[in-house]
Length: 600
Image (cartoon, rainbow, N blue to C red; front, side):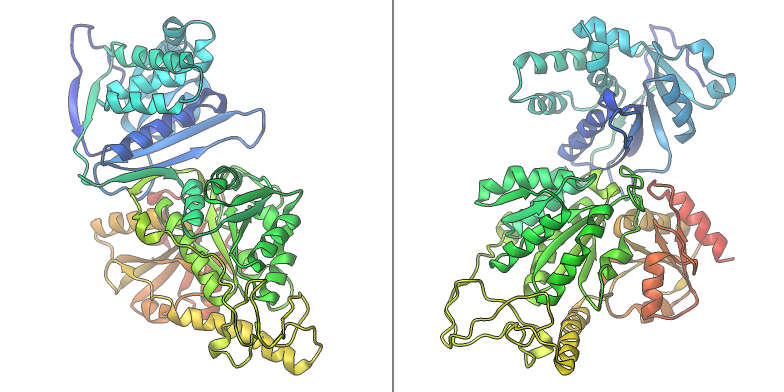
C-alpha cells in the first residue's frame, strides 16, 4: 500500500538474499545502462546475477524494459515477478505493474504520473514511492539533463534503496565514460550522487543483501554475445566474416575490434553469401574461421553451408536466434531455428549443432565447437538466442592459461595425402593447409561437386554412396563419444522436463519449485542438438511423462522442433512438447503449471 512516513521517521532496513528489479521506460532513456551497472556491480560483489531485456525493433525506439535478478546464492532465471518496479512514465507504470509481486515496491516518476491518478486498488496491492526524477535530474546537472541523466539519477536511488557499494558503482561509472570529455563523467557522477542523496522519506523499506556465496571467487561479468566472441578468440580463431543483423551484430563488432589485437581480422561483407564464402576460404587456408547471423541470414547461408559439408571444411557458424519467420521479431527471443540449423540445405548434408545454455556456456561452447570442427573436419553451428545474447551474467573467471589455444596451420611436409580417404577410421580425415609439401606430388583439389578421395569431381554412383556414408559415419562417431546427459534430480519419477538452449535455467528452477511442492519432477538438458547424445532412451525410461520445453511452435504433431527431433531417435508417444511463441523467456511458474496440467 502507499506509504506516508513522516520525514523524521527512518525506513526499516531488511536483510535479503535476492531481489528482482524491473526498470521500465523508453529505449532512449538508457535503462539498459542502469541494468548493466547493477549486473556488473553484482558480479564484482561476489553475487550471482541474471538479466532480461526487451527493446523495440524499430529505429525510432519505444517502450523497453530491463530486468535484473541479483542473488546471494544461485540464480537460474531472471525471475518471474519483480520485487521492485522503477517506472519512468505513465505507460511504463500501467504496462508493467502486473509484473510486480503483491506487496512489491514501485518507484515512479511523479513528473509523469501523479499520485492522485493512481487507482485505489493499486495503492492497496503495491507500495508506492513517488519521486520527481525528471525535474530533480535537471536540478542536479542542468540543461537537458532530464532526458540524458535521469537513468543515472535513478541508479543512485536504487543504490540507496539497496545499500549498494557506492565506491564500486562510482568506479563503474568512471570506467564507462573513460576516453570521453571529463565533463561527461563529472555530469554522470553528479546525477548519481543526487539520486543517492535524495531523502527517500516515503520509502516503506530499505534493503541490504546478505553476503554473496561466491566469497573469494574472481568473477567476470558480460553478455552472452561477448562471452561467445571471447570464446572464439580463446579457441584460436583469427578470421571472421559477417553482415550486420540483430542480434548477431554485437559479436561481429567485438570480433572486428578485438581480433586485430591478436594478429587477426574480421571483414564486414556485402551480404550473407559473401560472408560465409569468405569464412570457408579462410578455413581452407588452414585455420578455422567463423561467420554468423540470425535466422534470415542463416537462410541465405545454407547453400554455401552445404558446400562446406560436401568439402568437409571445418567452419563455425553462429546463429543468434530471434523470432521468425521472415524479418519476424528481430529483438525477441525464439528457439525456432533448430530445424534449419540441423537440416537447412539440399541433399544429405550432416553438420554438428550445439546449443548454448548460459553466458558462461557461450564462452566454453565456442572453444568446444572449434575443436569439434577441427577434429571431424565439419561445419559446426552454434545455436544461441536473443535471450542469452543480450542478458548479463557473472561467472568464474576462466583460467586462460588452460583454455587459450594456438591452432596455427601445421605445414610439416608429408609423403602422401588424401583429404577424403575412404579407408580412414570412422571416415575422419583432415585437410592440409595450402603450401604443405606433399612428396608424391599428388595435390588434392576442393570442390562442391561430389568427388573422389583426392577431391576430383566424379559422377560415380558407387563413389557417391561411399562419400555420403563417410560424411555420415564420422558424425556417428562423434555421437558415440558425446557424454550421456545428467539428470537434474532423481533418475526416476513422474515427469522429466527436457530443456535445450536458454531454457535450462528456468527448467531447473521449475524442478526445484515442483519438488518443493511434493511433485516427482526432474529434468535433463540437451547441449548437443545434432547429433543427439547417446543414452536418451534409458533416461526417459525412468519417467511416466517426458515434456520437451522450448520456445517455438508446437507444429502439426504438437511436440515442437526439439521434441520432433528427439522422437525421431526415441519414438515414444510419452514424449510431448511444452512450447510457446510469445517472444518472451520462460517463467518458472508457467513451466510448472503446464507440466502438472499435462501430466493429469
